Every structure is written in C-alpha cells, then in structure tokens.
Image 1 (cartoon, helix red, strand yellow):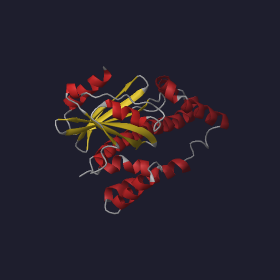
Image 2 (tube, helix red, strand yellow):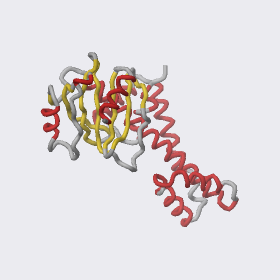
Image 3 (tube, helix red, strand yellow):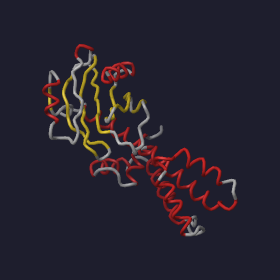
Image 4 (cartoon, rainbow, N blue to C red):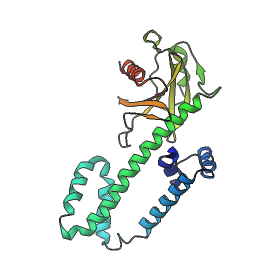
Length: 251
C-alpha cells in the first residue's frame, strides 16, 4: 500500500512548514513507515544535489540576476515565461539560461503543487479532528444570529454565515481553525446525519489555488472562490450533496 503521507506531509515536514504538534505526530509516524523514511531521504538527497550543482557557477552574475527576476515574475506571467524558456532551448547562446531556468521553473511548479496538496491535507485533517468528541464546534446554534456575532473580533475578516435548514442543510454551529498557518472560519452544517465543514478564508490572488474537488482519506471535498473569499467543503456526504450546498451558498 502507498502511504498518503509520503506524497503530502513529508514535503511540508522537510520544509519546516508543519506546526510543532503535527511535526511530532509525523516523527512518530516515521518510526513505523519505511516508505516515508525513504521519501524523506530522497528529498534530502535531491536538495543536496541542487545546492551542490554548478548551474549558477557556469553563468555570469548578470545572467543569474536575470533568471531570479524572471522567476519572481512567474506568478503573473507564467504562460509567457514558460514559452520564452522553451524558445531559449533552441538558441545555443542561451543554453546555460535554459538549463538553469528550466530547473527553477520545474521546482516552482512542484512547490506550488505540493503547497496545494498540503492545504488539502490540512483541510481534511481539520475535518477529521472536528469529528472527535468535543471538537466539532466552539459555538452551538440553531440559527445564524448566534454564530455570526460569535466570530466578531476573533478573525480579521467576516465570514458569511447563513442557516439553510429549509434547503436541508441546518446550521449546527461554528469554530475557529488554523489552515496553512492562518486563522480560518469553520461553519458546521448537517445533511442526513452527515457533518459538513465549510472552511472560509480570505482569497489571496498570488497564492496557488486548490484543485476544485477530490476524494481524500474517504472524504469528499469541494473548493471554490467567490468574491473576496475562498470556500472549501469537506464531508463524507456525497459529492452531489456538496455541490448542492455550494450552489446554495453561492446564491
């Protein structure tokens, strides 16, 4: 069997992006998982080879500076930059530039993918944690008028809170959670005995977005951006139920 941590948490652990609790949990996992040990060893070896490579030693300081500026602009000009790098391969004079830029661009793309995967993993982990006794809500409610004021002063944004009981998604309550090192709002709904966590946080234009939907550890998740907010639903409810709740929230 393939260990899920080998594709997600191990990268965040190597980069020092896990909090203390998750780091300790993963180190305990490393003691019993040969696959994660091997994956961590490979990542470390690759990191060492990149650091010891002579890619930049072959290029002039001006060329290195130009490459760094190109990578800095990657977020806003990714399609154009990838095209220009491809063209550079056909010009011998730009051989060193092409090699160095290709390595850096590939590294950037994989880092963005790993970051997106890490956030998805944290969202699903937060949903699983919430199902433990006493962790589901910080504030219980039978309507939105109790939950929405509770968030005031606890976040630097105002999450949209509504009760959708008439549409079949009653509001259970809300709580605070931490995803990717930031405070997020978690709105809790129910659907035919299934718990649905609706995670909400401010949209950031420059950060890599999540894939729109998927299945992880037996839980369905659905993400979208609306206005100035990002939303992600996580539940063992059916994908059709999640899409229905998404459409209701959008309205």
